[in-house]
Amino acid sequence: MTTITPAAARAIYQRIADNIARIMQGQSAATRKLLAALASGGHVLLEDFPGTGKTTLAKALARSLDAKFKRVQFTPDLLPSDILGVSIFNQRDQRFFFHEGPVFTNILLADEINRASPRTQSALLEAMGEGQVSVDGERRDLDSLFFVIATQNPVEFRGTYPLPEAQMDRFAMQFTLGYVQPAEEVAILSAQQHNHPLEQLTSCASLADVLALKRAAEDVRISEELKRYVVELVAATRTTTGVQLGASPRASLALMKAAQALALFDGLDFVTPEQVQELAVPVIAHRLVMEPQARFSGLTTQGVVEDVVKKTKVPA
Image 1 (cartoon, helix red, strand yellow):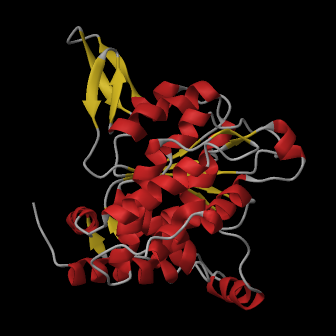
Image 2 (spheres, rainbow, N blue to C red):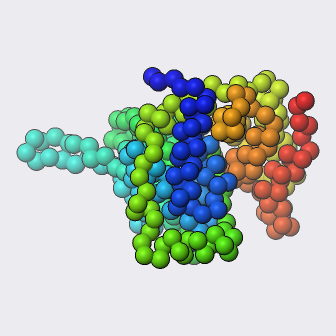
Image 3 (cartoon, rainbow, N blue to C red):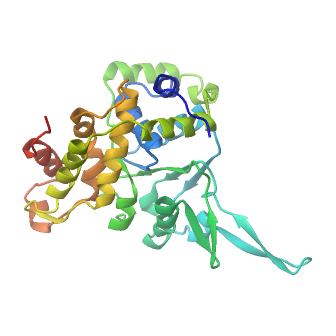
């Protein structure tokens, strides 16, 4: 098990971020969150309008790492066995052989995840929560690096199913990419005039580098006061007016781990309140369920979390 210095870990992060920036114009903030989730062992849900670069960001990360990558295009007729795998009977040997599904990889792109039925979406629950799958009564462990990047179109779009609350809770973060500035969009047009720059992108970090980066993030110090601050932020969502279902302790854990990764990226060996505040919305908001009345009055989960951050006392 390789242990590296914080400086070496930051160098790995910077190398990956710079490589992705060659493809993703004006998305440094999104890349920062994506890599924080990767380094903290969480999974990411990208929700945005079609054509904003969700799939491209996932592919750019996959090409930047020397790791196994699989993509599943979620459709209404997709079955759980299409993700997990299936046992096939071999006539010659008179035995069943397990044929691994795309979940047995390092990076899994679940494209347009909310176009599949809830039954198929839930096939990922065990894999994302416990790093294992159960097929035909047998437990099969996934790789030490298993990172899901799921994309979804806004739920108002035709042919989409809302993700169940338990599925949403398995994602460490949800965020959007948004539209880039006009100058950056012009640069995208120029870059793709003849071919897609993704075709020329090569890996800049190994699987061992990523695992070392994860261990370095775990070693970043976080004080007891900041742990209490994280818990207070999450707990406040459970008592806020208009919120039907607040964030779970899994949100507290994800917020702490992601903040440790951000502190590492920022060149610090300890977490500050700023890193926790930066990640509060992408880590907590998607886990909340609003009461119908509050939703109709215009209250959003993002607004609730922003308000909680403003009202919660920051440790000195």
